[in-house]
Image (cartoon, rainbow, N blue to C red):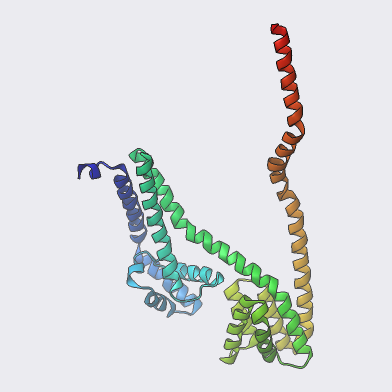
Length: 310
């Protein structure tokens, strides 16, 4: 028992847990009246008074202690998860649970590693706190990477969607029928876009207009190109112009933008490859070219030193 009490890793772990609990308690002990008044003002401004109650019902009790109090903060986190493709109501509590779980797990592993390495209690505590912070930030970094990858995949597949949409509209189909036909065709080539188009089609079947359904798609993906597409459809429907002509111009603009982005990436690649070339290729080339000459020079100096000694 005395050995356990004198173990530095145990005190490091307890100290890290105490610090985390103190920070969480300070965050939780803010003025709830001010937060409530701010939430009511935001709800009256947005016209959505039932949303905070729905969010609180969705979250289980064990996560409520860690969840943010303000409805705006919960809404922002839900939108970030939606942009990455996580749209279930349980996404927010699972993300928060992953943050705190990874923080505790990394802190435990760091305390165990400090015990094995024989660190001092202060050093072990510092390493434990750093590991806890890294574990807490790891889900946020992963979420940002997932969002960027999802947006890139959708951007690459949008020109094909627009080309098929223009072809269907020119053949005489309506906008709703064109989206239904394209959804069936794109499910194999672009699965992610096919899933989003399935949601768009379901919203249209439930009574939403195509431009409103596309606007919801833009909100889920956080893509400006899809918002422009929804705006084009809305303006064409409002002013009575042909949707196919507007979409053809939009498709050409997107294709040109993609070509410009490819050229920009190619120009950046030449600069990015310069540093690895200097660090990896030039030293090897220098050793291959100057190595034999250096060996011959060293051997010549050894022979001269031997002759001088004689």
